[in-house]
Length: 268
Ligand code: FPP
Image (tube, rainbow, N blue to C red; front, side, top):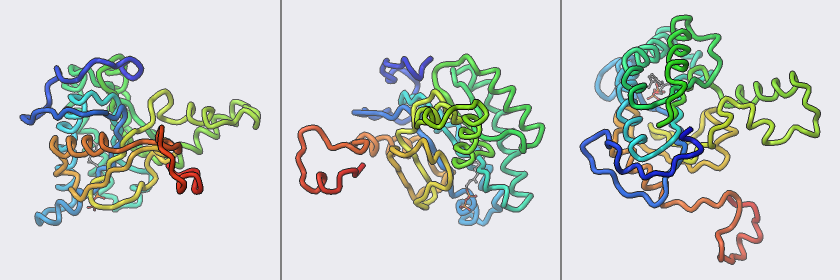
């Protein structure tokens, strides 16, 4: 499985655009994206919100391609949150329909390219036709190992944690054995590396109940680009910024002595 074994350089892969692939000194294994700004992209062009979501769905394919070319192993896309049910009914229907159309349109191609599709979130409330498409896509691509793409549809980070805790209770796990690992291994992302890089487009700087447990040590990257404008060059910019960050996971850098760090202690 690529998630545990990928070591080869991604340079030989097609880049997914005419752009040369920049050299990265480090690259994230798992990238998670909050695809925000479809509505504002549409409004700025005098279009309806549905057109913005349609353009947003079209932006996804080149981004997958570019991240795969960089050797990213896992991509998680926030397609529809548990809170998005609160949007007008017609808009909810549009987003869910676009999710199904995305699968119809790209499943063959993604399968050929070795992408494994997974679903994060509760499928029960999704329209039956979308559930069926998602199930089919997940089953068909289950053995692919170039890249995992998680489609988060009816996903909420808190609901993910609640479900994990419910599982622990159902399994009768005693309180003393309820550890961080015990919860992590029962989340929707069990077995995957945590997101190294969390990207949010659309200019807002918040996490909006996305992978709240899993992103504790993610590097956040916020861009003012609206999601439909997020392209291969924007992927490169985000990954270059990631490569420039120093990740400390609550520790201090080796060889660095800093009295402020000693006082504050837990700075991440
Ligand atoms: C946020 O923009 C976007 C969404 C809530 C939906 C994202 C859905 C897609 C890109 C289409 C289908 C998805 C998949 C995975 C195939 P917004 O409406 O909040 O924009 P605004 O903040 O400008 O109003």
